[in-house]
Image (cartoon, rainbow, N blue to C red):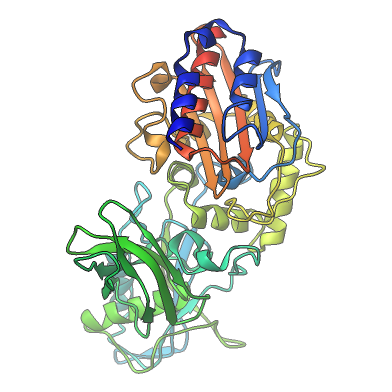
Length: 477
């Protein structure tokens, strides 16, 4: 492995590369150790004219991973609009008499990803949302609820694709896309690492607390610096989760993130608990459901989301799968299949050849997703001339971006790419992808997409090779 790293590094810094053509650079990357037997699709075009700048297998069907989010976020900006907002409404049924509500409180979700979010700029905290809802209940003269708090997620089909891996489902990045999503669909699970390799890592607590959630724990302590290699195994609605893998030594506590087992039920439970602390008691336990037939609902208040462009920004910069899935359902009127059709129609209208596009989710977590590199390049070329181009561009990561997560934060940092590159990346086991915009030294804007499947090189080396390619494009065009 050491010899492989050295040989690829020499390939990157060899003086001969800078003098060669772009095609020569591409051939040398394609022949690199750990890449020569991989499948690689590359498409680079002039954003203004559509002229091909460079390509390699641009129409090869490949697994794209998280760059799929660019399709969904662009479609959302086009079809819904950057300033689109979503309202979560609080209702009651029954009647109010002498401070008693003889009925239920309903939280009607409409798919707002930013409800109580800790990630979206401008979003109210969950505490502030609950505070406003409680004030509305008290303003209506309700001091006691002879009923329950009910979480209503019926606006969406809240289900994950069946092709998502079993080891992913219980973790935050595969959270259930509920129409009533709060707290970004996640909880933090805290462990106490052992003092030696192989020792059991004890479960300490969850934040927030989730009533009824239990764990069967097999997580062990790994070496210092080994990172989070743990998984939470649990299906949606399941309150017994199996924990496996390792977490590193070296800190008193170590947190991993899990997916809320039942988002709408959790919302009802959480608000019920908040009401109790505020002195408004419910005589029945919270539950997930819908109003009964013929129920007359009265609106108490509504919480309006931040503009959709703020959600798009987090979706792409943090590669947040849940938000992509919620945007897909908003595009499809609550139905994921209709959302997929809307994205496909948008891509076709943008000039992309979608005849062989296979898309089963919005976020790219499924290995069943396949697409051509050129499809993304054509889409980005289309967006370049749209009014919402600045909003999509702003949502993409730049070198050293403090709002980004993962490997892209350092890619291109300290080079000419810092002020000229915006991109979205994707990664799965054996998949590395990149798509975005590059402003060149000569003032052109290029759109580019690179998708590699089934490589054996280290992912960091794949990043470095692409950094070199982008710098070559920057300097020559």
